[in-house]
Image (cartoon, rainbow, N blue to C red; front, side, top):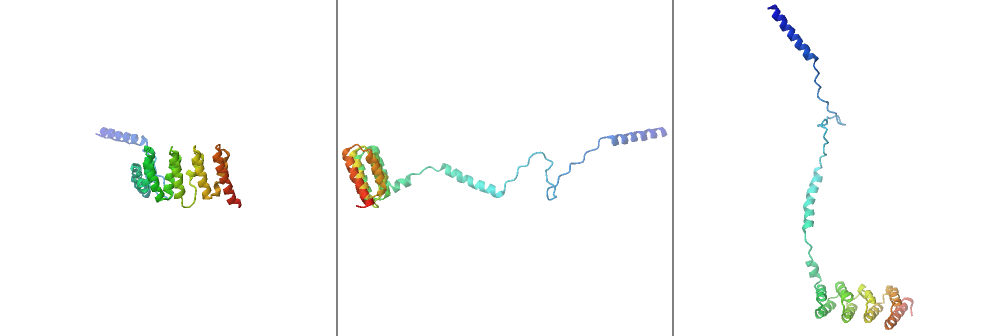
Length: 216
C-alpha cells in the first residue's frame, strides 16, 4: 500500500516538472497608444486602413453624377437658331439649291428687317454666290441696311473679288462710309490691282479719304 502511494506521488511530481519546463505562452501584444493616449483600434493589423471619406464629399460626388449624365445625353437643338433667324436660313437653303428667285426674295426681306443678322446673311451671299449680279445686289443691300455707317467684313473681302465690278462697288461703299481706318487697306489693294479702270476708282477713293484725314 505504501509502495503504490509512493509511485503515485512520483508520477504527480514528474507531471508538475514537465509543465513547468514547457515554453511560456506569449502575452497578447500591447496596443500602441495614439498621440492623445487613447489606444488605436486595429493597430496590430498589418493591412493598411483606407481613410474614411467625409460625408459632405461623398454627398457632393453623388449629387454631381446625375448632372454629368444629363449633360452627356442631351442632344443639340438648333430650333432656337432657326426660329431666331428664319430669313437667313432661307438664304442658305436657296443658295444650296441654286434657287436665285427665292434668294432675291429673301434678300429683299432682309433689307426690310435690317440689323446685324441681315448684314451677316447678305455678306455670306457676297462671299459665296457665283453670280456677279447677285453679289452686286447683296452689296447694295448691305449699304442700305447698314445704319451705323460701319463697313462689314464682307465688303472689305469683296476688294479681292474676281469680278472688277464687284471690286469697284466695294470701293465705293468704303469711301461712302468715311472709315479712315480702311485707308491703308485701300492703298494695299490698289498696289496689286491690275485692271486700269479699277485702279482709277482706287485712286479717287484714296484721295477722298486722305482729304478727310488731312483736310482739303
